Image (cartoon, rainbow, N blue to C red; front, side):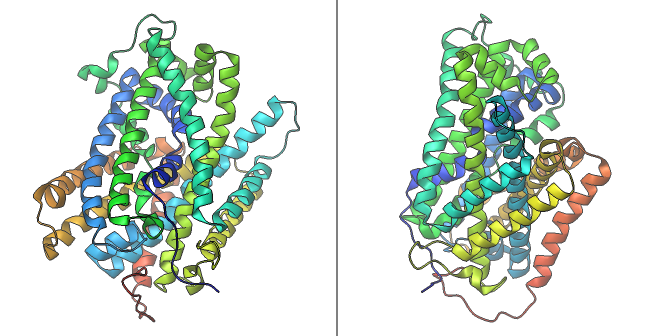
Length: 468
């Protein structure tokens, strides 16, 4: 028999594994860092990660302060609804569904290309990218259907493996004085270098790398002690991701030298990291890194699937979508209907992309990742606003730093990042201004549809322990 509550005893570690895996650390080092070096602020790009982490820490202060006053698992949706009302809340929910689906589809495209390349490298047949994406979808669907603890264990193993090889690389570079260059990079410490090139594009690429850390709140119902676990997991995940990105990108620059790193990133961004790891750790290290890049992408897809399933579950419980999505499995305590719903949506779009003959990296990954970046920044700005309004109107918490200063500063930083992303959006998606405008219109439409949908009369009131 199905119920409408989720079960689990996730601790800080399990939730951190879940959301850090969504950020796909190795994928960021392999994909984003070369782009930031080549098109952003050059050898000082590592500092950009630290700057973005600072902005997001300010966001996290208000986010965590409000978490104890939002006893629901809807994350952005629940926060915005509690602070700004039902219409903006449901608008945020629909925007979140589009945003997280976009990032998941982006990774489906990327992993299909990566697996195909690995199979051919090992002497296997050349198959269309979407064949491998569908295989991954099937595995993710099974894991998402079952209890969250199983996904947590899988993600934990995969995350430790991908982070371990990069840390080994970092240590070797630091210990050998640049992995052979004889000098560690200091560009990240020089203000003139940090603001050189295109800082706006650098910030845009860096902020996109943090997508996923904010999803801690969607696991509230499955957390062991949500009022303590969620804030601790949020801060821990953000700090781990930010420090890892900053140090590892610095190690990449140091392994080449400042000028050579920028040149290598511009010449061959797709293979730069594998080449760098192979040079520093040897051919075996390079082969292992290629395999772990694949598992990193798989971990990201699984993590975002779990996040999306819980959004569908929250909306189903609130009767904002099909009520069946709000049912949980009697045995696994999982949002099984919501999980199947998300699997079906992903299947539909993969088939559409395949029939359209879209390139898995240049089109599927670039377009969908760009969409997700814009959507997440808008959602975080909305959430910051909701935090400020909620605490000003309720006085539920009167700590100035937690409820006013930090959220306000975070909002200013997020709006600045959003403005930079909008200005450079065609660059981010690798397409035309017309395509950028079309993607932006889809996001605006998603929010508008959700806001209009909220005007339907509520058919049932969800108790405080549910998801309203």
